[in-house]
Amino acid sequence: MRTRITLACTECKQRNYNTTKDKKTHPERMEMRKYCRFCRTHTVHKETK
Image (cartoon, rainbow, N blue to C red; front, side, top):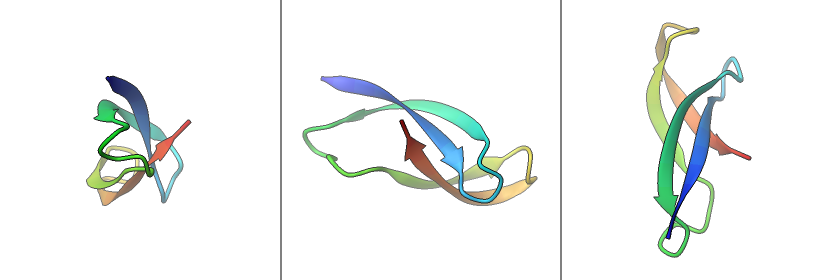
C-alpha cells in the first residue's frame, strides 16, 4: 500500500511537495533534490510527518 508523504526543504523548512511512497520497499525517510520556489534553487527535500 502506498502512503502519502510531504517533502520539506532543508534550507528554508517550507513544505513544498506531496507525493506517495511504498513503505515496504522504502521504510526509511526519503530525500530528493527538488526545486524550492521560496529559495529559487534546487535543494534537498526530506520527508516530514
